[in-house]
View (tube, rainbow, N blue to C red):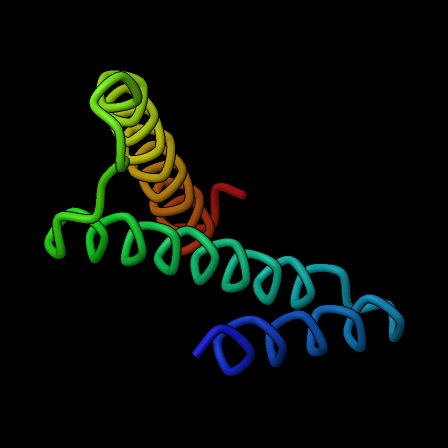
Length: 93
C-alpha cells in the first residue's frame, strides 16, 4: 500500500520538476504529502482500534501523550493541505 500510494506521485513530481513544469510538480508533491498524512492517520487509527499499547504500565502515560500528539499533528497537516488545495482550486495560489 505504501509503495503504491507514495512512489507514483514522487516520480511524477520529479519528472515534472525536471521538465520545468513547477506548478504541476507542486500538485504532485501535494498529493504525496496528502498520501503520507493519510497513511499515518490510518496507521494510528488501526493501532487504536486494535488496542495496541505498551507492554508495561509505566509507559502507558507516555504512549497516550505520544498518540495524542501524533493524531493532532497529522490532522493539522491534513487540514493545512486541504486549505492549500482549496486556495489552489480558487486560483489564489
